[in-house]
Image (cartoon, rainbow, N blue to C red; front, side):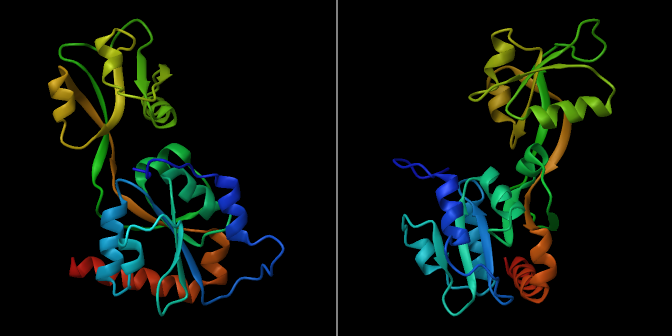
Length: 238
C-alpha cells in the first residue's frame, strides 16, 4: 500500500517527469518504468533483482518516488496502480507494471505485453449462502469497488444490474441488505467465508502485467524489447 503520512500530487509528479522548460526529445536508449506501489511492489522488485538490476536504493526504504538504476539508462517511478496507467498512456513513462484488475477497470490506450504471472487472484461474484442472483424477477443490485468490470461482466450475460460503488469492505453490502451480491477481488476466499458469503462465479483471472506506451513501442523498440527480454529471463530464475 502507499506509504503513510504523505500524499502524491499526480500533476506535480507528471510535470517533473516531463521536465517542463527542459528539452523534451526522448533518448531512444532510455526507458522510464512505472511500478505499482503496494501489493505488487515486493514481487516486482524481486523480479528486477532476478533480472540483474541493482535495486539497492529501492530496497533502502527511501521516500523518493523516482530512481535511476545504477549502470543503466532505466528510471523507476513508484506510483499508485491507476496512476501507472495514466503515466504510461500519456507517455511520461514508457512502460509500467500493473495488475490486470486496474487495466480492466480503468482501461486506456497502451500495449499489454507480458503476463508476469505473479500477484495472482481473481474477480469473483459472491453473495450470501443460498441467495439467488440469476433468475430473479427484480434487477440485481451489485456492490463493488469495480463498477466498470461489473457492468461489463453482466453485459456479456445480457443482464441489467444496478451497481453501487463501495470504497471500503465490500463484504458488508450484502450483510446489510444494501446489495444482492458483490463483485470483488478474491485470493483465498477466507474473508468471504468468515462473513457467510460464497462465490457464485469467477469473473476474470488477475495477475501483474507489463504495459507499454504506444509511441514508445515504436520510438524505443530496441530498448523496450531488451528490458522485456531481461524481465522474462528473470522470471525463469525465480
